[in-house]
Amino acid sequence: MSKSRAPLALGALAASGIGYYLYSAGGNPRAAEKQFESDAHRAAAKIESKIPTNYPTHTTHKAEKEGTRLGHEVGTKIDSAVTTVNRDLSQAKHEAEAIAKQAKADTLKKIDEFDRTVEEKAAKSKSYLSSWFGSK
Image (cartoon, rainbow, N blue to C red; front, side, top):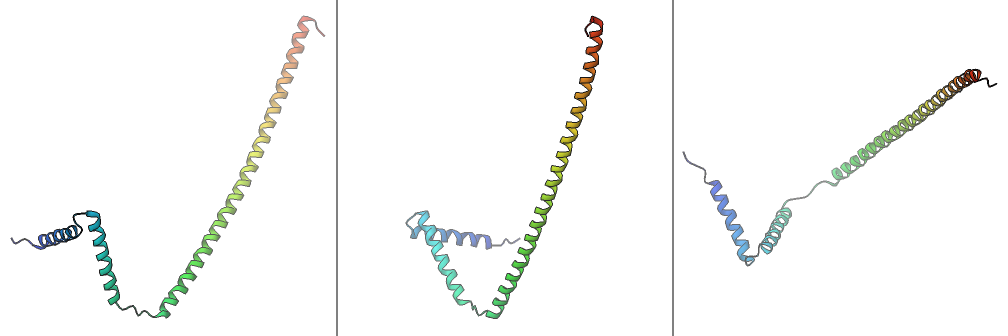
């Protein structure tokens, strides 16, 4: 079977390109890299200058207007969602505070009932023990 020589040719081309830039930079890899970047930028600029850029301004203006409209629409929807979330959080906060207040009131009521029961039982016990020892 015959093998493709393209990888070998690409490898040789890359090695010769690296060798050229290293040789022209005096063996300094950083200088060679900077020179390569400069040449690549110059080549890209030359290619871009050859490409026609005669885009109609009407289309660009229309796209800008559409982008502005869509951005405004998205912003309005986000603001609406944030307002809804804030309202829901405020409502949940008020409900939680009401529940906590009611739980506190119920707890204090139960504590008062327990205290009253303990005091009543203590009073009965005291009167019962006092009757044994003759205190009045």
